[in-house]
Image (tube, rainbow over all chains, first blue to last red; front, side):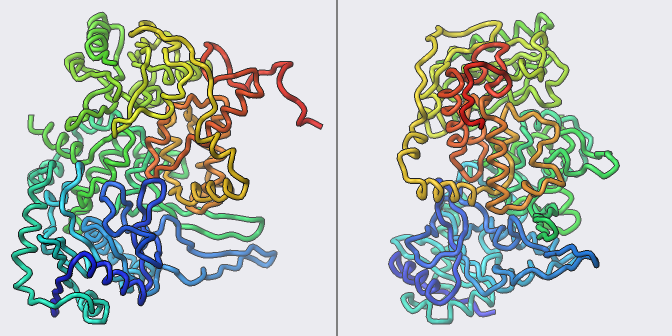
Length: 351
Length: 283
């Protein structure tokens, strides 16, 4: 793969984004009620690619929508007619700008589960047709801990194009995948100047080092993962989940949670079947038709959440499901931090 | 407003006398001066308790969880929290004899950014109305004012109001965090979660969000105490108080200045009958 590297300045970056918007369907963070969500935009003034990480929802809904139509049906006296839904609006060729590194990484993690067993063709199509442009954060937020996990934040190719704010107002644009190179080789980069990859490397490294030094939360991932995998029955889960109000918002804002429920919107004999988000923290999530619930207590549901993120997924797919974005902690009404939970549980076992 | 020392002492005393199994209060979140709720079962952890103007979350919510059910509970309540506790008692959700209530004469709390919360600026009942022990100096009931946002919205034409609320429902992600964080949403099975309910199907469509949020707000009409737990929980930062404050102002106007949970044993506006209730909408 050829790596394309460009350098430009603030004004050049604006022109770069504008050129993308002119030629492609573009999604970017749009503010509403003080919170940014990724929506289709036509002009740069309507969005903010530099939106603060703490106030931005993940890009997951662009690939796994909060509600997706599965099918339509009409009940007639002769039986039920099932028909395909309209064309998927998310499967067209598009570019996402302003994505955060952790969100981009989350999709890479999710690819594993979507390519395993049942292949979700809708998800595949959305992934294939999307170019993700991600700006590297300059500073970690209060609840961020991406650098403490099992992936290489600096060199990963989860995003197609990387944007880095260098020193002296210089901005580096670099491709990380074939798709990214293709886009950068088109005329969208006409306001930026091409530089050799090696020439930009020291600046990129310098920016990453200062970013990596700004983290409040740090942990030894291997140690935590090893400890958690051995302590299914620890009473610690009960104490760390004590003040959880089971509101489930953590799962809804999580960039990697992928549980869903099926529900119908019916009007007399016709209906649409939807696939929508659900959460393992819901009391009825594991409730079976006969009335048995294998996870009736809150701590069991919390254990499932924490262990799925930090142990089970790693065992099965080789990746940690949590990407360390801190969105769940920010959204939590009682500020339960997944970082704190896994560390406390792992720690508790030691004593 | 700082009652950290008093609350620690009360909790320690209650544990020493064997009067409670669990104490529900606040602790520091561990990295800045914001507070998170904590459920203390070990008397040694009493020193973790704090109470300042950062103690925002309504702890009455925890009376519906397994950690407190059928247990003797010590609880810290501010003015608004105590009103929701009053309703929980009236609606037979908790037994008074199982509770030891530390009431606070609240001077208003602040949000994460340090700004005084809007509901505190408009608070009518700052002093705890249910308590075994009252901390601080009671300042008495304040005059009722219509919420500023409701007043501002009411001044706008209908089309603008409709557009505004459409935006609210559009941005709802149907996580139901508002409902779960509400102290008065205690139904074992909420109507919004009924698998067969076609109105509230789990889909994240604007119409489903509209039906779910409107049903929720109407079930809380005459009961909402304006603690803003729902808004604190909303990941989309929706102005959910508008739904409740509108109901509250209509009820205050039409039902003999009824305010939820202020008087013990007082059932909600919709649960009692009075000859003075308006009936001009009945043909």
